[in-house]
Structure formats: C-alpha cells, structure tokens
Image (cartoon, rainbow, N blue to C red; front, side, top):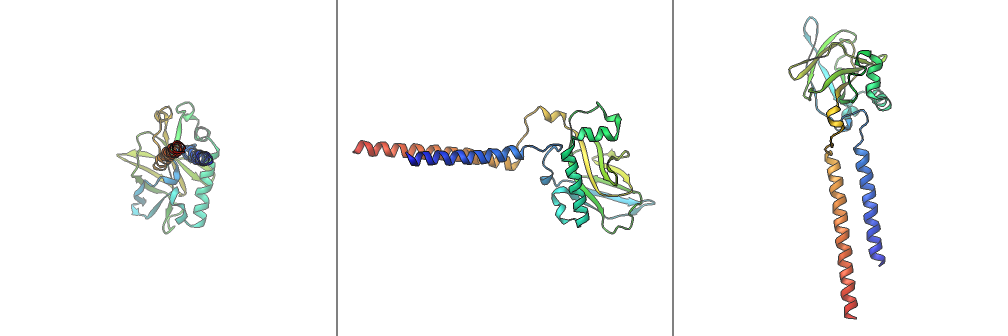
Length: 223
C-alpha cells in the first residue's frame, strides 16, 4: 500500500510542476508570443541620404547577450516598460488618434537596431526590415531618448517595412491581435513537450499501480 501511495504522490507532484510551467509559458502579457523565442527578421537595406549604404545590425531580444553592455541595458529597460504597462495604453498616450481604434494590441517583434560603425549617429537613415508577418501591422514603436514613440513614417512596401529615423535603439512592431484573443492558442514546442510529459507520467503511474495491484492480488490468492 505504501508503494502505491508513493507512486500516486510522485505523479501528482510531476503533474503540478509541469502544469505550473505550462501556465507560465502560456502568458506573454503585451506580446503575441515570448520575445525570448522570437528570432525572425533582418535588415534588408539601410542607407544615409544621398544614398550611401550603411551596415545596420538587427538583434532580436532573445539574442541580446551579444549586444554591447549599454545596448543590452537599454533593450532590457524597454522590455520592462512593455511588461509593466498595457501596450494599448502606451500607444494611446503617445498618439490620441489610436484611441478606440484597437482594443487588443500586442507586440509581435521586439528587437534592437544598431550601427556597426556609429559614423551616422544622429543623422537620418532610411531602413528596410523584413522577414516577418506584417498582415496585422498597426505601428512601429521606437524606444527613443524620451521613451516610447511611434515611427510615423513607417510604411509597408511589399513584404517589408520601410522607415526613416535619426537614432537607433530598441524597436517593437505592434499588431492588432484581436483575431487571436478569443481563439484557442496553439501551444509552443515546449508546451507540447510538457503536456506529453504529464500524460506519459500519468499513464506510467497508472500502469504501475495496476501492475502492483494485480501482483499483490495474485500473491494473496496463492497464500
């Protein structure tokens, strides 16, 4: 009996930890999905008028450890602000024209843009980025010297986003997330693994309990 109870307790503990992990991974706050696992995107082109090409580095939040210390601190500060304040509130506070237009905004891409040489710091640069879905695009946010601001000239051209700006730092692509709010979200790879692990633990535990019970019954019948 003690063995059976121990097995049941072990299954319960495993299920509790796995379920907690699943719940935590499934909550992304102001983000469509965890920014730690988003690596899509790249700089298609960048140039400084009158047409000199520039080398601009695209660094997803998940790769922030490769940034220089000041840039890493900056993007982590921007991330903290996105976690602490509702994204709709942030945008409405920047530009009142967005009030009431959208109710379920979320960040789909969060990344840093930086110059490799720094020669054009403070000068206007035209940048084209792409490699991600822009179908529900609302606006491009930039974490400037005074905090979050909307890049007003950001325009979708084909499958890419083109904009001009004079200083680089963290950026966030904001999308209308309404179509996903009421629907069932597909679990990430880690979530599927967790669910399978829980099911496997329960199945193995039940099998073990059944086997032990049958073995004890046979032993009792032989006595």
